[in-house]
Image 1 (cartoon, rainbow, N blue to C red):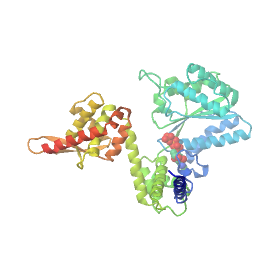
Image 2 (image 1 turned 135 degrees about the vertical axis):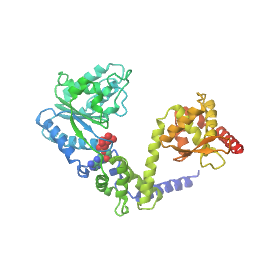
Image 3 (image 1 turned 180 degrees about the vertical axis):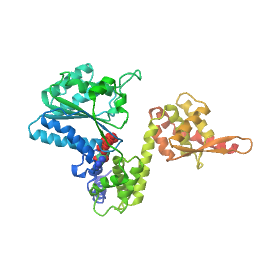
Length: 447
Ligand SMILES: Nc1ncnc2c1ncn2[C@@H]1O[C@H](COP(=O)(O)OP(=O)(O)OP(=O)(O)O)[C@@H](O)[C@H]1O
């Protein structure tokens, strides 16, 4: 490319970037970012939970140990927000009066074992205290890591509050379902540490969970030493969600929100379990759609499209959890309308099963019976990936099933291809296309 071309290309890229920024409907998009910690004045309601947590944490400012807490409630009901808001204020007051107070927060969602959880605690404690981690990630026992954790706490803090977010997800490897889950072991160790003299200062634990039966999973001794004060967070209704969004209206430029956008976003999220995170996501996605279209305003159709996108994302995430054979069955069915030359509204099970058989051969994997394929597809139907209809094929030819995809089948196929076991199929697109076409032609000739 000549120099002149180079320059004009970069000018045009810059121009388009600037135009996108200048014409955006957003004023402060970060207010709608799920990871932004919002200012206190944007918190709506939750007075009772705030009062309770303030009461429980007050002793930390009086040289006493706060009780352990269990914050329970469905996703997106403000558990993290409220505990963090109170902790932030406690920390400011403690620092002002010269106390050495530490907050250690760990999200347990992706932690696979008790040992990893302890290591993450050491890392967080070291970061909070501004000291070296001081132990390797592997190659030493969990107890040695725990000792280092207690050492960091003893040397640096008079009082520590440990927040374990999504604690129910820390299960660990259980050889036997009767084994003690990792969170039970950890809660026991943390709540017993000061009683056993392993830490000099005060330690209390706030565990956050969506699981109403969380305490039932705990081992008896963990249950009695953790012994928390419960703080319950219930679902938000549409009015509360509306108020939460209203308080973030200034994420948008003035005048870009048509009437009804906030109530509609709140209503969709309220139907869907009253999760504030979902309401905020929807409210932001509607703006992103408006920006993509360059309309400069957000209308109700943008919220409806955002809701559809969100539903689709969720379906696709669910799909990732299917077993290999179920994925393959669904994939074989999805590639039929994607690759067939003839426009197909619905996929006959006969065609899809033959494509499935071809794919098992291609991928060198087990070939399950036709009945198993139909069962897998029944399950796909209960997940709402497809809907099926029984079709007769004329006198004496029996009945077959036809599948229609709820979402775009090409998105379904692409998502499933990302799966490791389907990688080989990705490079065989032409072959798959010809198999699909041959089977479709066969099927309609037979009719
Ligand atoms: N009462 C509220 N006022 C303002 N914003 C809120 C309120 N409750 C929740 N939010 C917002 O909703 C989002 C989700 O809240 P939060 O992370 O506290 O939920 P959670 O109950 O901890 O969810 P999870 O169990 O999924 O971790 C955050 O962006 C938070 O700022």
